[in-house]
Structures are given as C-alpha cells and as structure tokens.
Image (cartoon, rainbow, N blue to C red; front, side):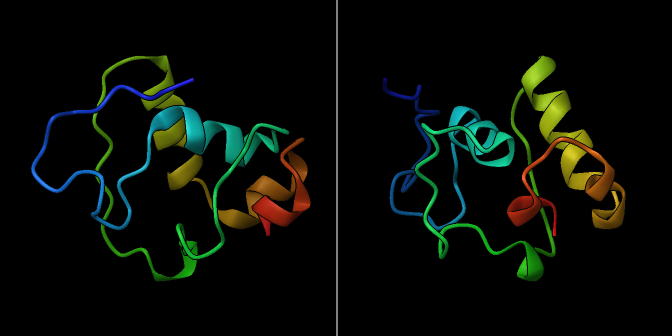
Length: 82
C-alpha cells in the first residue's frame, strides 16, 4: 500500500513528515506498523502540524494532545503509551 503524497518540496527526505496511515498503525500497535525508532522521537517534539480535516486527522490530534499519563488507561500498547 502506498501513501498519498502532498506534493511538497523535499517531502520524502524531510525528517518528521509521516503519512497518517503509518502514524495510526504505529500508535495502534498494528502488525503493519513500520515506524523506525529514530523516525519519531516524541520526547523532542516542540511543534507539530497535522495536515487534514477528517476523522484520522482528528484522532491523531487527540492522541498527540493527550497527557501521556492518560494514555496508560487506554488499550494503546504500553511501549507507545509510556
């Protein structure tokens, strides 16, 4: 499966540009998740932009704004929620 590109200059080589499908697969603990550990360092994120206006964009926004401690009570994999 391929992700739709936005058509932005340097989109493919810019660190931190991640397709929503890959991000959602990662935080859901999907067996299809192929996120590398150096690709997304949640501890160092200071600014974040989510491009989209649908349910998936809203889900990603909700997860990223939630206090990490609150994620401990979800069914999210502990390796992701911690």
